[in-house]
Length: 343
Ligand code: SF4
Image 1 (spheres, protein in one colour):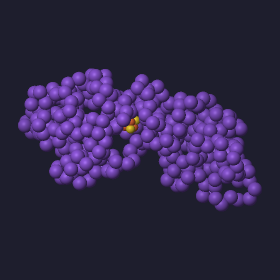
Image 2 (image 1 turned 180 degrees about the vertical axis):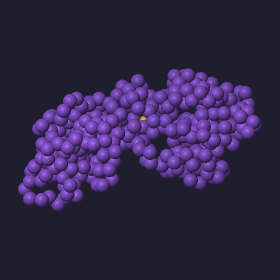
Image 3 (image 1 turned 90 degrees about the vertical axis):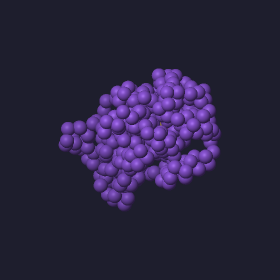
Image 4 (image 1 turned 135 degrees about the vertical axis):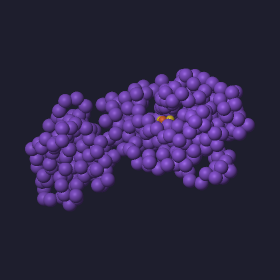
């Protein structure tokens, strides 16, 4: 145990992608105690976190910490100092936020350095040399930020200089090709890793449009971001936002991310759940009426010319407040006027 305590210690950023897997393994193999730091943005749920923790520990991490930025992420998403990538992804600012968290953790734990799975030139925005230098400087980690996969191409860091890690055992990968990483995975016996596709929703153009629409109409809030991945979204004429579930999974997800003050609409005939939200104050009557007819319009089967839609307001105190039921004519979902409301 005493030996463990005396080992050098590092905080490693761990997304669960191949690069972060390899970086963690390379550092752990050098006898360093690793705390893996995993970030989930506000619109990402908890799915897969336990598996990632198991993966990190299997690679040699002795601790796994989940970081869920809230308002600090909203601030950078609304006004990123280094701008957006192709879509709504403020990658340099986002990474900087994560590195600052890692630095704080390094200090709390008395660790010696921070490491990442970055590869020089692999990503156009955040892994250019200039951006990597900015990240090192502005995170306050100058000399203490190790990039094990590209270390041979970068200036020597403190842990290399003091012999905590052997620079000769680090790599000099550059660019977007994945072959060196895959060969290293084979060499290290790493077989379970995700494909490079997928990843952050902010890099998706459709999701990105929803983000920019939210910023423009409601500003950035954690609650607003949490609603975005689920269901169909409509911006109603009075300014309210309606999110409608496509299926039961969406319906459950929408209920789980609704916040006090939201109205929950449900026609109870194999229908979508609607979450209706207004930025400030009460939902205008015209929006409530239209939202109810949209819920009815997407309900199947519809019963007669008018459909009953049940409305409740989330109070946050256990029981929801049941509001008067509405009898509405279902909206025609193919009507171009309705389609224009879709976000
Ligand atoms: S891809 Fe997403 S999570 Fe990754 S740095 Fe960019 S904004 Fe942040």
